[in-house]
Length: 304
Image 1: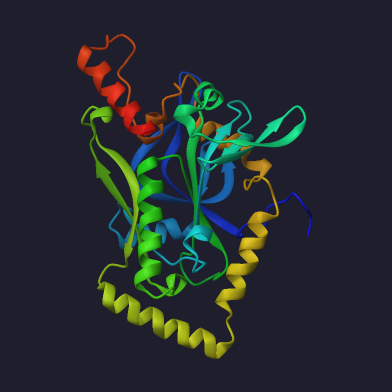
Image 2: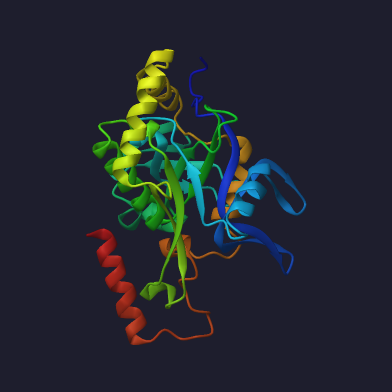
């Protein structure tokens, strides 16, 4: 195995809740109120849709706001990897990855390990726009049981919700997370910082039409069938854990440009709230005292 190269789950498609649009000669990310499944191929108009997008959209009567999925691993941390990440805004290359305690950072001397106090308390992170960055791998359909779709996000709401759900489902199922019939769901909310407009985040639940008890029973049945067939889930988790640990950074350098375009559009401010939706007023609108107090309170909560 090549050292320094993270071995990640095979990806056959992408899941997004937005798309890239061209405005005044610039390509900018635009949020959406539904999921889109794409292949890994782009053309001038953007990412080419995956065939499953049309199939699921027809079943959902047009708006794709729920996707039936299962996860690859029993270990929640293998399905969803979340870090604080500092990207090069032009290339999308990862420069620093941390977990709130320690980080690995690219320097003139090579890769170095440093303390990671979180983006709000790190001068380098504040200046460079360090963000929480999560990658979730899920299986959709039965065509490729070890091939996954990846959902990338810098949304605090999505990362926090998905991490909690995966941990809870792992606990209540007795560790049979990979056998549970689950469903990605798109939820909306309004906050002070979104100025009451809707922002969308991704949640994970039991597949529609099933109770939690029924889903757990189904997971037990699937686990029993897999064991009879010789499927070794523990070995799969162990192989994935070793693969992730084999490289300093997870993401493929070939995808850096697309990541820069999606997560660092031209003219974006460094505020972490930008990751969730339209959180800043236009520059022509002066900030009121209430605005300033709300922002200060949000910053205090982030560093608490």
